[in-house]
Length: 166
Image 1 (cartoon, one colour):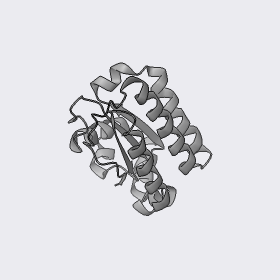
Image 2 (tube, helix red, strand yellow; image 1 turned 180 degrees about the vertical axis):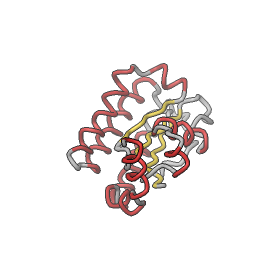
Image 3 (tube, one colour; image 1 turned 135 degrees about the vertical axis):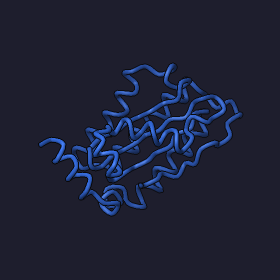
Image 4 (cartoon, one colour; image 1 turned 120 degrees about the vertical axis):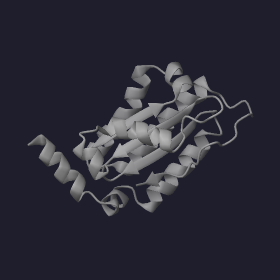
């Protein structure tokens, strides 16, 4: 029954629903927040919001985390000079947030740091506060990254700051 419920959620979730949760004004604010943060640190952040998993992915029983790994590879988030790319993946149908850091960033920040950033989003999303909680989480992440990867005037933008809605 749980598999059927999940399938139904993914079949009925649409990009327009995702755009209602994350309207143009939110996406512009997110892009500005990522760009501003990347002037303070050398890490690269990419945000991808996906309304629903592809049907074959749901039928295979794959998790949102597995999809995040697929997108991490597809969008070459691993392909940064210092291996410090970060994917923030939001799956609307599954109500999941996945944060995938590349190996250098993953080693530098503690599990509690990642959990705190994720919790800021998930608690805000549960309260229907998508805009503010996402920006607050990005600000938290930028502050953590600035401590571990200060810019040192060497940063070049290697990944697009523009959020994607799939």
